[in-house]
Amino acid sequence: MLHKVAAAAVSLLAGAGLLTAPAAARALADGSTASAVSTTSSPTNRPTCGPEPTDAAGWQGLFDGLTTGWSGGDGAASIRLPDGRLLWLFGDTFTGSVSADGRRGSDARIVRNSMVVTDGSCAAVVTPGRAALPSSDGTWLWPTAGAVTSAEREGLPSVVTVVAQRLRRDAQDALGFARTGTAVVRVTVPWGGMPVVGDVSDLPRSEVLWGAGLVVDGATTWIYGTRAVDEPLVFGRELLLARAPTSSLGDVRTWRYRSAAGWSLNEGDAVVVRGARDGVSTVPSAARVGASYVIVTKPQEFLGDAVVALRAPHPWGPWTTVPLLRAPSGTTVMRYSPALVAGLPGAGAVVVVSRTSTSMAELMADAELARPTFSDVRLD
Image (cartoon, rainbow, N blue to C red; front, side, top):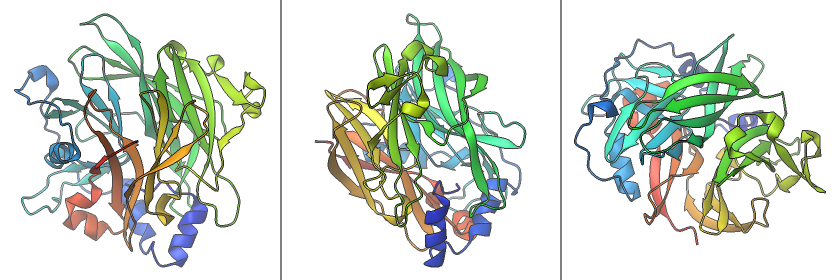
């Protein structure tokens, strides 16, 4: 439930008295509370499920009803699977029991990431009580986005390529962690079955967080990257763009970067398609909506309260800003990482916003503080 914010923004928040308990935030990342109970139902059991939610209230009720194997998570991203279900990716995730009055049990703990599969009104946690994506060499993965990159005929498995930040503890950083790179993870999803995590490959080191957002556009996938800037009082990030054949998204050798001359094999030629002063969040959400390319973002991260949609006729712009909702952060409660839910065709647009608290006591006393919130929005 740690806050994905630039160190400069954290310092300003701390100076303003808004980050009063960074030690508590670091304790959450350590996962140093008790062991989790790991019971959940599986889609392969084929429970009787109602229709998939079509509005914010339906999604809120579905995720608020989850306990034990998943009782809160941040950085929500959703991917529509070929069999009609949704695969949800989360970063830091609470597991453990929740009492009837909304308090977390003594078995509550944090795992670094999780995956949830929703099938209509049913939900199943892929690896209850433990991280879904592997850790190695003292690092862990926070997923940012995913895309179906291989889909055979009905009844056969599909492949989802997941992009994730690789992080490690860093005592010199304001929040105690730092990004060391980006990884791509191959996830195989049997038709109607549970995802199986496969190979993990690290991309070349870069100051750009490539894969912060993905848009599958037929045989081409658009890859958005974000980059922090060292400018006073600028807390948004620059937005950059690459493209790749959808089938080889995980192979960076097939990427081409948006450059001043068109497209380049060289990442160093990548140009900014939206400046940091206007800004996007560290991990914006990207989608194709009708004839438009849409990025849902909170441009100023924790320091702002506006969640907006950036609409453009091309993946690189020009961008028109559409206000969506307000998601202010408070003294201890933070709201961040808005994302567009990959809802059913014809359903209303829904945005999910992550939230957490810098106070461990608050998070234990009120499970809702670590659960995402869903809002109905209009994108036009």
